[in-house]
Image (cartoon, rainbow, N blue to C red; front, side):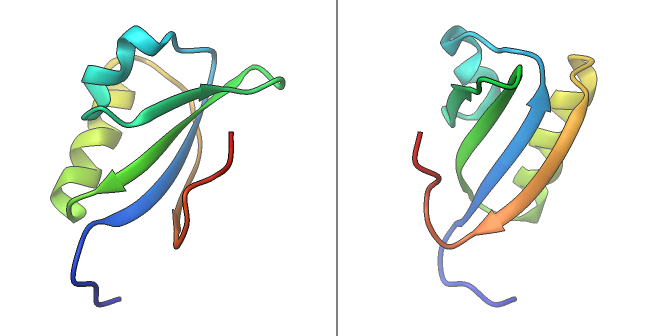
Length: 76
């Protein structure tokens, strides 16, 4: 995949994260869902940054549900 700018990602974790956790995720939007998950939504600069976000999720002990690259932000 070639891209001239940041790729948009939607990462879903089990559990609800308060907005105060956003700085841990490079300011990405944290959107709690009705199913008890949280969507972490926003642009990611490159693969290294994506791996850093996934490492943060792991370090916090959050169960990862899904990771998807998208063309558009997910409506909240």
